[in-house]
Image (tube, rainbow, N blue to C red; front, side, top):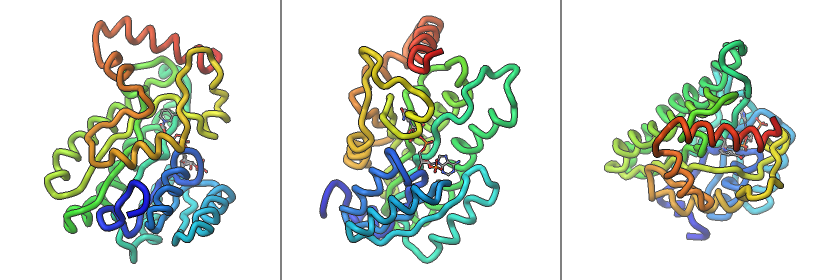
Length: 265
Ligand SMILES: NC(=O)c1ccc[n+]([C@@H]2O[C@H](COP(=O)([O-])OP(=O)(O)OC[C@H]3O[C@@H](n4cnc5c(N)ncnc54)[C@H](OP(=O)(O)O)[C@@H]3O)[C@@H](O)[C@H]2O)c1
């Protein structure tokens, strides 16, 4: 075994949904180095191609699927590329907030898109890829979650709720699948220096802000694949614990102020 992932347990192929950049691309590189073939899914063909080329340069077998996960047939289009492969590891990374807006008065269709990406597609893809893993009696599922999923927040209430769904969903899956040899972990991230967050204007330089690097959290996730159902990365466990507590009014107000400062609102 090279690196942190055993290909006999989680290979021979990994499907990294949202694998073209940031944390997803780091997962893909580390999996390639461990000897797994990698299927990358994202919308932007250019970044997909660049990441695929980097993995091939490291000697990995790679396939790409350029698809918008909001498309109703996204699952089928991904399956068309993976049907002849044994996918032993599913990583669902795509899922940053796509609509920061107060809920009431906002565009309901755009709020719904957040749920389609983070809840509906997540369910569909896990349903499709975890079933053969359970039959084989081995495999792994990583759902990339967020500290946002521990507390409601203005402007991103639907996103935060979708990440709470993901975490609780992961717990249920873990209870169902771990006895069958399939590891499930919700990898909870705090602020992470990804291209998507840079484009969204997040101020990584705010004094006192704990910022994780994509490479480090990807490595931590792979290292703790078997430590589900929830792994809080980047030293953020105390924050997750605090946000799980009471009284809720104080926690919600505190988190709202922190997000507003980070996003310059
Ligand atoms: N960055 C942070 O500070 C932070 C904090 C907490 C949690 N997280 C979680 O970490 C994960 C990764 O976040 P991120 O900041 O890297 O942003 P992201 O927008 O989720 O992007 C990650 C990857 O997903 C792809 N992607 C995004 N939307 C897609 C769609 N509709 N269809 C297909 N592919 C799509 C992106 O490529 P394309 O754009 O080309 O499609 C990229 O490869 C998310 O689940 C997020 O909730 C991030």
